[in-house]
Structure formats: structure tokens, C-alpha cells
Image 1 (cartoon, rainbow, N blue to C red):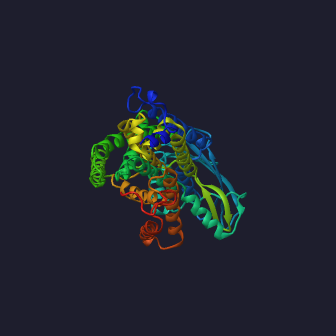
Image 2 (image 1 turned 135 degrees about the vertical axis):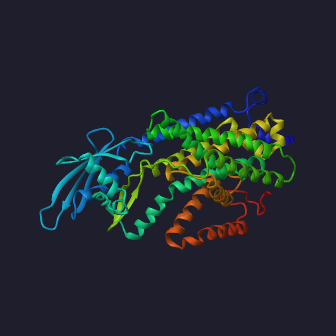
Image 3 (image 1 turned 90 degrees about the vertical axis):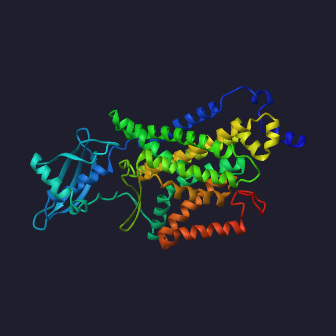
Length: 474
């Protein structure tokens, strides 16, 4: 034991400093606040200059065929209109028996940002003047709201400066770009598993449901701002981010303390069963609070940025994909820094290596457990926020699938290794995307579970986990 204490002394702060009276979460809350500020800053910078709403652009373009019957429409440019909540579309109308006409349309909408009626058209004008109220009503009622009108969007002309690449490379590159949000979500959830397992040797099976809690908190935070008349996507996502981090951390700290911290014993099975009960409780709790109907946020920053082309195939990337992937990357780097360069990280690594020796050096095990559970819950809540930002929403039972696949990613990467869990999340997200692109999607999940079996046979410790052929018991 003395030798173990000597080895651990380089990881730990002095004993006198470690025993100073303090509350459970002060320093961790400050670090989470700094991380939230960093993520909000990244989101704000990525959103600068994004003035074209793709939903509004689609509605405005869809009206063009009705304004030009029997004409072939070529949209040249979509830009901000002369007034608030308006868009201007410049286009060419080609009739069979007359020269090509260069025209424009200015669409005025009822709202913007995160408002649910932001795509509601309230005014439309062309170079010939504004449409009357009756004409606008007939256009909306008998064209835009019909299947023909919905399918009538002529689209925008792809950027001419997109460079040419081979078609096989273009398709592969598009799949990689599409996988970015999914890999970020899996990586954050996998890290949550690794944080708790690395410290306690036990698995919390409720992290998928904690992601659903984070998604519900994101929608609640954005909805509160809408109630007070603020529909800014930046402020809405900032409020949702803060709500998701707080809700995930608090639910995880409270639930994990009673399902992991208060169930001692050498066997992890009672605690594992308790976390299953916690997941069921959270699922039913969300069903009652949020209702069985999934609440969706309208899409934001989803206008495609062209990057390359292969003949008619265009490789594109949406701003929200860049934002969600960037937030996931920033959170991963921040977490690695937290574990490697702070007092919390030194205590976590020391306690994970030898709990008894760490306790002799002044590490409070209960305090450290609560901090770890809160941090893991915040990562799960952040993943729920990314799901809402990228896909619009998550049902009360939708977190189970995310949690299960993130657990597979954590096992493949190394269940006790934080970098390994991140690598496993990236690997599983990329595997799912590429399998869906090139192979039958019906057996994708079967292939993923088969890959897990292969890893458990040939590399039971995962990519970056324990090197011993027999891992710790789960």
C-alpha cells in the first residue's frame, strides 16, 4: 500500500488541499459553464452570415412554377430580401415559344428562426408587383399545400466553382460528411459510459434515456425563449445547450448516486439491474412530462453548401452539420483536457487506478463519484441537444437505441478508456453510415452486433482499453 501511495502522489494534489471543505459540484459546475460558453461561441461563429433559411427558400422556390405555367424554371440565386423575414429569388423562365425571361420573386414570411410558422407565406411580389390577398390565398391553398406544389421545388443552381472529382470518390466523401453528426453523438455517449466504468467498474445503462432527457430539455429551453418572443436560432440553441447540460448532469448525478453509489458489494449485477430500472423510470417520466407525441423543432441552417461535384452529383455540407460536429469535437477535446490537466482529472485517474490508495491520499470517493456522474450526464445531455439540432427531436423512447449503440462503441474502443470510447464512437458512426451506403441496410444492426462479437473474441479490451486478454468483469 505504501508503494501504491508513492506512485499515486504525482497524480494528486497535496493532502491538506484535498481535504478542504467544499460542496460536491462547485469546480465542476464552473468548468461546465466554461465549456458551455465555448460551445455557444463556436455555434455563434458558425452561424454568422447564415441569413438564408432553407425551409423558407424551398417554399419561395416552390411558388415559381405556379407563377410561370408551362415554363422551365432555373433558379440562379437566393438571397435576403429587402425587408425583414423576406427572401429574393432570381430565376430564369423558359417558355417553348418565347425568349428566356429573367425574373425575380420576393417572398415575405410570418416569422423566422425557431418559430413553428416561419415557413408560412404572408406576401409575395414579382417584377410586376405584389400579389393580391385573394391570389396569395389561392396559391397557398390550392398549390403550395398540395403534393404537386410540395414536389414542385425546382431547386437552386449548384455553385459553378465546385471542382470536379471522380464519382466514386464523391459518393464516398458525401457519406463521410453525412456521418459527422452521428459520430459526434455516439462519441459523447460512449465517453459517458467510459467515465463511470473507468471510475467504478460498473456500467450505467440509462445514458440513452439521459440523452432523451437532454433533448427534451433542449426543446424546453428553446420554447421558453419563443414564449417570450425570441426566435433567434443562436439564442434558442444556447438556451437549449444550457438546459441540456444542466438536466443531464442533475438527473445523472441523482439517479447514478442511488443506483451505483448506494449499492455496494463486489458484484456489479445489482447495480446494473438498478440502472436498467433507472432507464425505464426516465423513459416513463419523459412520456408523462413530454407526452407520447414527439415535439420537433423546425430545421435551421440546413441550406446545402456545395463542396465538389461529379457530373450531376453534388457533394454538399450543411451549416448545422458543421456546428454539431464542431460542438462534439470541442466537447471531446475539453473533456480530454479536463481529465489530463485538472485536479479532478488527477483524482479520477488515481481513484480509477487504486481506490483505497487514492482515499488514503485524501480523495473523497463519494464527491468524486457524484462529480463523475454529473460530468457523464452532461455529455449524455449534450448528445441529446445535438440530436435535436441535427434531426429536430427525439421521442421519449428514442434514447434506448442511441444508448445501446454507444455502449457497443465504448466496448469496441475500450470501455475504461476515454480516448478509446471516442474512437469507438467514431468507428461505429462511420461503420453504420458506410454500411447503409454500400450494403443492405436491413442487416446493418446485425453486422454491428457481429462486429462486437469479433472484438470480444480477438480484442476483449477494445482498441485502446485493457491489454490483458481478460477484461474486468462487467
